[in-house]
Length: 347
Image 1: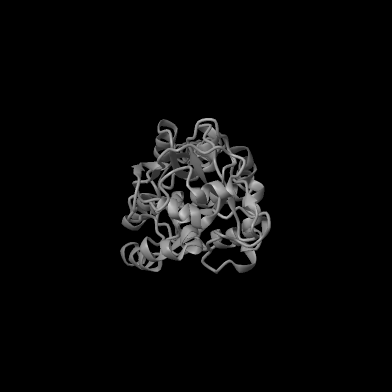
Image 2: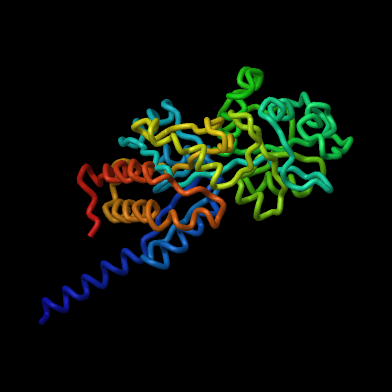
């Protein structure tokens, strides 16, 4: 009888310990809306708590390298130098696990003009280079012959923090504008030629909302939440594509066939007549070998949940779910996670 009591107490203690487990993460603001939904739903189901700081992809990458979080998040993949630094400091590889797809939209504040302003890549690059200074510039007018554009100076808004949203946006501009690629380039942080800086997607969305004549780039969910009009962007096929989960999925359709083994890939300026050209994956950054067995088990279980039930929340929050072929690749990668060199115990 005494042994049975001890066994019951051990089981209860184990369940309480797991229920009180907290996983700490930091990084991208781009997926913040869906991550908060995931973390809330998952806590209801399992009791596992998440403390996620939406500090930008650059911050997420720094913290996963320094080992101050259990997981990071980024919309721009870590580069080879960062991966090497993490391996040297942490003694383990960093895995990139795609979670959902999203659209970076070009939002603006122009009285009496709703969503659907048409822009092409070179014109957009020249606006952010400061070469196109007014909304009624001839190059914008020729793309929008049916609109009365104001004689107003353009106020550019961009991110002030390290950002995967910035990586996706500047990666696109670098592909469509040689001048942008040469003078500014791509990255989570760049030296902006002009404009005002805002922290996080929420900061840039706030700048656009408060400033008439402004233009900036934000994740689609933030545009919808803030009732911010956004542009249709001319894609590689020559069509003006509206950002939506359908057009983002179209951009990702060929990704699975060309996904590298480490799952780091860019899908900006993708082929396809319906593809939205400023689309991208967002990734969770996970230690391949996790020292704490309880956290290893919790992280693997959560990732498997995110690949299945978690995907069902995507479209209602203005993200595109992963194609099934990409989910399979992710599940294979998740199965390689270990704890102290051993297979993770999921019981």
